[in-house]
Image (cartoon, rainbow, N blue to C red; front, side, top):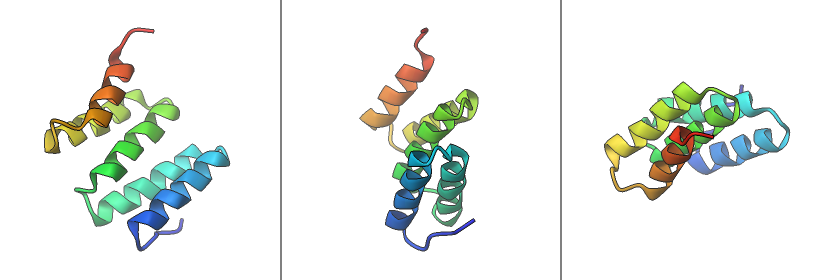
Length: 88
């Protein structure tokens, strides 16, 4: 795995993996970024989105809730969590 040095590179790499259908690789990139900076809320939100897309709903929920713990007013995390929890 490649560990990007800068957040922008990590987001670009995760987006590339997503386009290639390699969602788990995108998850690993976001986890690496969060290891370096655990308070990177955009990365945490993106991680939740990728986890949800891979079917890891419980983990995605945890990521969205963690964003809201640090920023209770984050509309993106609230919306994502609402979509995740709403019955189909």
